[in-house]
Image (cartoon, rainbow, N blue to C red; front, side):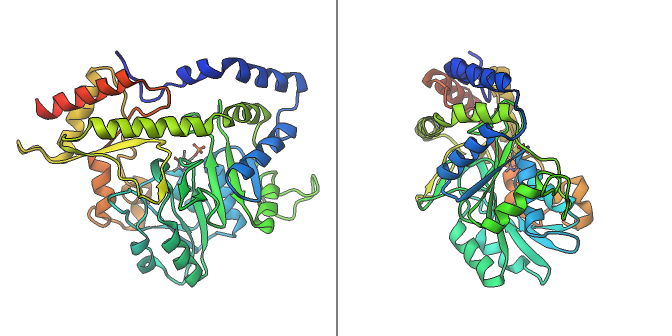
Length: 377
Ligand SMILES: *Cc1c(COP(=O)(O)O)cnc(C)c1O
């Protein structure tokens, strides 16, 4: 029985009629960019995420870029973030000529450690970007406190965390701006690229909505320089149809995570740690391997487990194999192996397993059996 890492076809099968009709409606309307469908989605997402404004953009990466543009990040500025994230979190900072400064993670949650941020603050620091990795919110209260104390902006990278909660606050609603991605494999995924900017600040909302249309307001009059970064109506209509199911899908992922947690009991590996005050939505379910009693290192174990799963037709992925401070493009920043040990260790020892909502009990049992055999064998 093959088990893919994600199975978008299984999900499409459950919502086919609705989604097909939603797309057909857009074709009949022949309104493809922004328009009423995007407006409706913006209102529903703002409501869902507990913010006043939400602005549809062309991807999660562009959401980050426009958010940073809106708060005025540019040459000479520094932005503190985690090195254990998707590249766009730091890439957006660099694209604006500013410098990403990496603070190490908490090895339990894999999110930026609030206790390692303050030592990175300089006179050039303008913002902090916590990432809610794998669907669990970063520890926001201490982060917001540090930001407040030093007059810094907080941009939440909530690309993997729509619907996640931190002490009853929604992911993306706690900082000055929150960024969502609708990449197809996110918990709310479109059928192409898409993203959303969340904020309750009317000035930032206005800035972002002008920036996404080349900085033009009114049309063809430009007082600032922006981008072409708009959400398509086809994506919005697919997302509107899917939004009705998001809470159920998040719950199904949580049930699958619970099931894995109990099936993995007694095995030599670390299951995901969720803070008791967090509502984790498991965009990814990531295990960490330990050194084996036979003398194999944790990275060797990880590669062995991954190979066994692959041979059994089970999909896995490493999120992320190289922490950003060690990426070739950032060699100029001067980091060395050993500088951010928790991130480096997570890159070497972790593995993401299938966790999508439609995953069956039998499939989960199969995944666990293969892992168990490869750890014991
Ligand atoms: C997916 C993702 C992004 C980028 O989103 P896109 O829509 O693919 O551009 C940014 N940050 C994180 C943490 C992500 O997982």
